[in-house]
Length: 118
Image 1 (cartoon, rainbow, N blue to C red):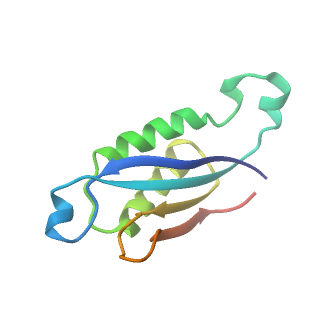
Image 2 (image 1 turned 120 degrees about the vertical axis):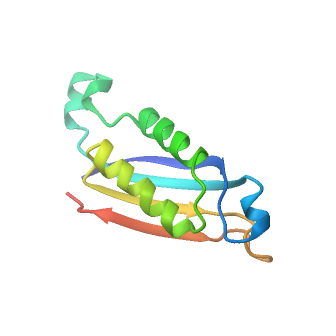
């Protein structure tokens, strides 16, 4: 199993349960690891033969920017569903960070894994 990853992908969105959170955009930070097989791409040197991380990033940015979930759990689950289904990735690990959500803590968030490691 090879892993293609995105680190520190920052996206502004409406997220949270409190009234003030429904009125402003907050920045979430994503780290995403996606299982794939890079052998064909390494042999051909063609982008069509690999998981295009730019395409994944653009799709996730568009989705998250237009979402308005209350819970980070729901947002994380929906993001992994998109990656698994739309990009034919067999396994994904996602860390979603909502910085500043708890006073005194730099990071607050969730880490989920979905799919099967190959």
